[in-house]
View 1 (cartoon, rainbow, N blue to C red):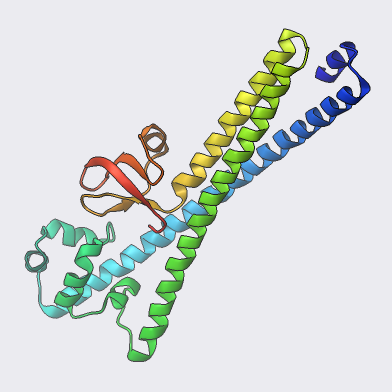
View 2 (tube, rainbow, N blue to C red):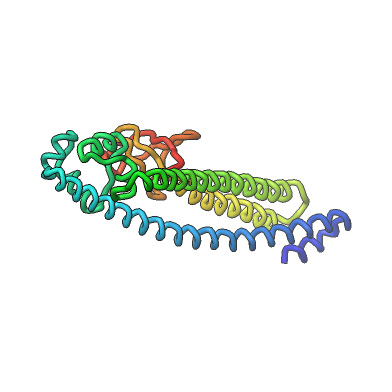
Length: 257
């Protein structure tokens, strides 16, 4: 319909050709963008479910291991909590698989239970032969998570760039060419929709890339989308509420959860 209206303007053949190519290209971009967005959201949903399941299973295994080693030492939950300077409710939470020790407590906990950090992370005692293999496996997993987060950040930046370029082209055409007002409104509206859609996809990718670290308790978490979008931010920090300690401060973006 837009092409038919433009033909009525009796523009030069060269200009007509350029406009037809541009509109055809934009149609392909919108079609591919919609398909890509659906794939990204579907893949993200699948990946998120798998990750949540794996994290839950790891926490349960580690929790059982902490309970076993505590009992082997003859400690009650209250006794171990007193040694670490925390509440016995926190110990209970760990052992039920509903949480994981903070980074600052890893070494003190391991010293009290007479285990290594590597054994704590895998949730079992390991022999000298297995120790190096498990340590390398944990390191590889951290590196893979960091690489995946970097890819998501780069991809979100590329989507923002392509989105702005496509929208800017539409705005320039709608403002520079002689056309009816309703056509100008349609082109401007398409440009705004392209920007809106691109920003949503970029936000989804950026939010799921790594996590945010609370400056108070060092808890790492992925915020809700509403909190992520509404939170004031700089390039590397965003003002969020920590789900653990409740502090509402600028949290640093980190590549691993």
